[in-house]
Length: 235
Ligand SMILES: C[S@@+](CC[C@H](N)C(=O)[O-])C[C@H]1O[C@@H](n2cnc3c(N)ncnc32)[C@H](O)[C@@H]1O
Image 1: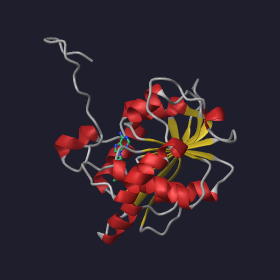
Image 2: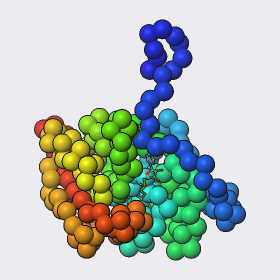
Image 3: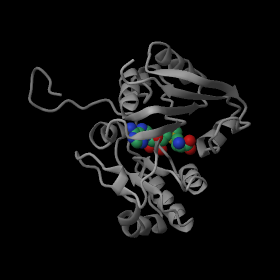
């Protein structure tokens, strides 16, 4: 997008700030040696999931996987599914590469780029079985709420990339973000809510506990989980 007064592209609002976390030597080595195995570079060309993986299978996408422990755990647990993880934090990607390699995972690919651009440029329509967004950055200050990932246009994008009958799973430990998510969902006809739970971390849904969930629980936060079904695309 360009502003009315000059020709410079206007910066879009990002849901993350690139942190300059230092890579450990093993993460650095993993990025050099294991990226060619698990990594998919960002480009404006659509991916072909059936040929990207060793076997054609339903694809589960995790957005903002953090250190990737949960993602690797799920890929190991469901070898008949293919997993794609998107994360911008380089040390997290390095950590995930090491875990995936140690666990001998073959059904996982990682993309290190803004998920909004990856979804819009690289992920084909109707191509995903499930999308997981676990503990997205809460951006608690009111002036930062516009940076929150869960917004109506983002849900529209996810809906278009989900195959018919696909599901979107969201979890947060921030009560104010939960209210915001409820409001965005209430205004949308793209998803029906199959399940919404507020709980104390007793793992009621089909997902592993994440690092940020444990952190929230230590602070005494409640956990909110949504399992949402995509409505048919022509509804
Ligand atoms: C609060 S952490 C949660 C990490 C992990 N899901 C967990 O529950 O432990 C949110 C993560 O989302 C990532 N993130 C935020 N916006 C993103 C975007 N637009 N694209 C990719 N990753 C993003 C951040 O870098 C961060 O690692």
